[in-house]
Image (tube, rainbow, N blue to C red; front, side, top):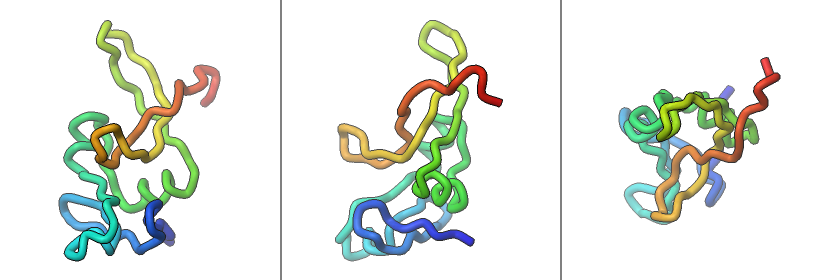
Length: 101
């Protein structure tokens, strides 16, 4: 059962083809929480679903393997956060333990 609530205002999260957002984000724009699925897929290779959002907003970090600018793979730990431009999305919190299976 999905229990995710908006981390900003506590409202219900709703999903459509392009976003997962707070019920108060549109049309009244009372809350700014919106996750763009296309951005998550393009930059992180992750299909953002309501189930995944629920998991992350419930306090779990997810592991994503990416390639550095130097061309070396690394696995980072990610959560949902707001960037310096004011957009919500995945945010790296550290590196995954290489011994973790």
